[in-house]
Length: 217
Image (cartoon, rainbow, N blue to C red):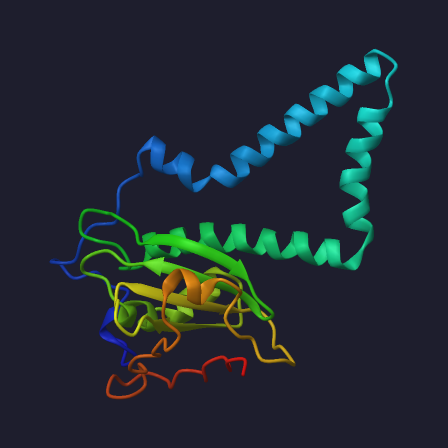
């Protein structure tokens, strides 16, 4: 067994749960809701633009091309689109890494991803854990999560009172300014003193955890 942590044992013992079965269709549709809605909007707008061109009306086509190319021509627009793309990628990669690691229940249920928001260094993910999963499990698999999300590292914190709420800071780049909580975060989740918990390197034989992201003053 690896000295890092018992949770990182890649050889499944006989009493370990089997990998989760394929999620039901409604669950899969919910996980792909953003892409489905975006595809429906693009198809509808493209159909309206094509209908306008057949009737010699150019304004729908011009409006469509302007809506696409104007944001792409500006740096802020490209950064906005890239940050949202990273949020979508992180959501699906988290689902996958939870499936491939013990971050799921014996019945195959995955943790709930409540919210993903872009930050100055990457993304912030709010996760509600299932019964049998805690923040320590996510901390033990921080390297696997970072590799799955193509990130530099992942910093795990938990709610000071509601231990079933976990925040994953997906760090893709280093910021020159402190990255505080996003607007509305404290209002929605009600607390500011999110605790880093016990580092896996203390008493578990694992490497020390990277420093937490600094808070804005």
